[in-house]
Structures are given as structure tokens and as C-alpha cells.
Length: 238
Image: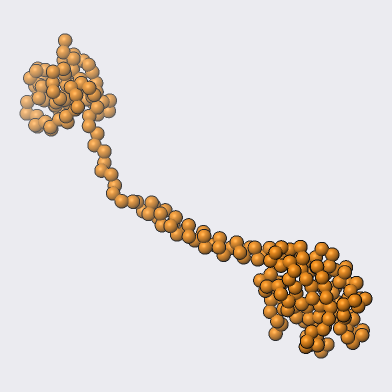
């Protein structure tokens, strides 16, 4: 018995089946003249209309069939050729946007890091310096008290300021020196310690206000770089 196969768009290859079953499918409308069929001995799948006489079917007056697809083997596979859509050329909008963002973001991250890291490092050093200067108000009070009481600037070894300096220094200040500046203002100099290599051993000079001045201290002197100083000590007062 000859075994027949036909191709169904939803199921793929259907069969094997006898010729009678194939004819019944055609008469019931499951197959039409364009349905591809195959049997052993055929070189390729063919429209049912080309084999109508062999199957005893009346498909007269039907439009000419479309050329059938060629399969690689007589019965090796029942799958019809699948034509994939042509690949899109070039990149889509989202891909282009992602590439542009990546190209911009990488150097921008480097720039931000180059700016932010040094700024943060300076901030932490400033915070440590400020913590080491918590006793400066006591030293200022001692210098003013000595000047107002004696009419002279405190010198190293003077009882009141020297005692305040020793109490203030501890681990915060390496040394505190008292004296008079060239312009006549009383002053004291603190040497920092315990902060780090950027500030250890550097100094801040606090100059007392003149008796008839506005009462503001000048702490712009000394060797500590301005970026590590408290805000009031970064420039001479106006």
C-alpha cells in the first residue's frame, strides 16, 4: 500500500495515510488543491492538484498551483522551509543611547572621582584640625586676661597662659608658644600633632585684637595650608 503525507500549516507533516484517507480529507475541505503532498517515489513535495489524476480527484478549473518548496530529501523531513525575516541592519535607538551613555559616563565618573576624593580628604583633615583646636578659646581668654591685667603680652612661662596651654595641649597640640608680633599685637602659636602627615608639625598663629579694635582675632598666620584651616583662619580679617 502506498503511504501518503501532507503538510498542515499548524501541525506540520501529517501521515502516513492511505490514498482513501487523503481523498476524504480533500472532500471534507481539510485539504485543498494547493496543499503539499508527498509519497515515496516523488522527488519533492508537490501540490495536491498535480497528483489529482493519480488520486482520482476532480480539481478541474482550479487556479494553477504555486511552485512547491524543495525539501532536502524525499522523506528526510516534513518541515517546510522557514524564511526568517531579514535581519535589521544597524543599531536600534536604545542600543545607540546605551552606548553613548556608557562613553560619556566612564570619563565623567573619573572626573567626579578626581574632584570628590581630594575634596573629601581635605574635609577630613579640616575636621581633625578643628577637633584639635577645641581649647583655643581658653588660650585666647588667657592672653586677653593677661594683657588687660598687666598691660603686656604673655610670654612663655607666664603663669596664667602657660597653665592654660598645658591644660589645652594634651594630645591635641604639640606645643603652645606665647609672645608679641612685630606689629605689637599679643599672640600665641599652636603646633599641631596627631592629625597626619598633611598637618603634623605645622602651626597656626592667633593674634589678639587691639584694645580699641572690633574684637576679632586674626588666625591667618602660621604654616598650615589654608585648605586645612577653619573657615575664619583662611584669610586675614578685613
